[in-house]
Length: 119
Image (cartoon, rainbow, N blue to C red):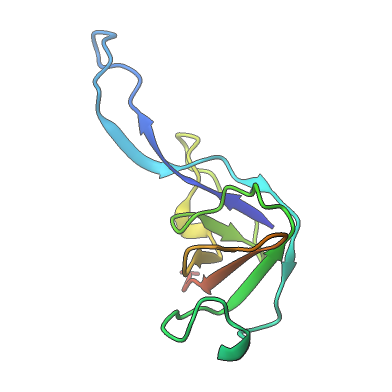
């Protein structure tokens, strides 16, 4: 799988070579990671996210330093695509994060929601 984290990209310079100070929202370059992916949504009694979170699957890992947050994107069925400017194409992502990742003493569980994709 791959993940990309949300970031603000500072515009480099204007036509005079001066920094503009403007921010363009985007995502980091996708990073490969390994984790367990559930077959489908479990029942509420097994969910650390509660009953109000709408999610499709969960990711489980012992890598507690994985920087995935609520604004990250996940690819599993397809590979990430990059735009001409080098930023990741967020429309190519397979999943969004449905809730804040649940961290325990030795496990990180992330609820993900499948995205509707064009084409």
